[in-house]
Length: 95
Image (cartoon, rainbow, N blue to C red; front, top):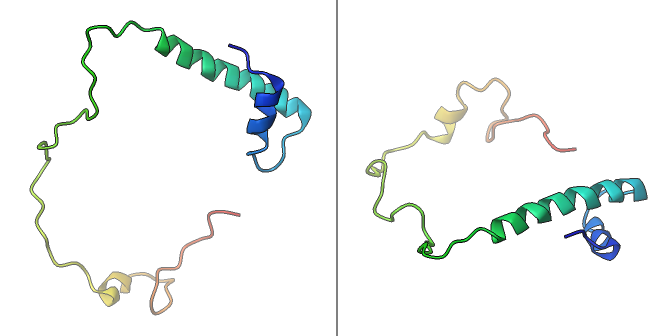
């Protein structure tokens, strides 16, 4: 199902920074592929297959949870060479 231009424009308004018209055409093609995949999934015959809301049984645990003491703030920061006195200092990740 091809997407209409107005649908692509609505989706493009959510994108930051703004998309130029050529990029909107590319977005339209990519979105059409994605919608096509969903249509293929929708067309799969699932008659006779019981619906499941949870894939893993609720009683399935990997191990028992045991509360144990954690490090104090001083112990956690002891080997960090670039901390201030209270926090770990990390490099800036996002612009």
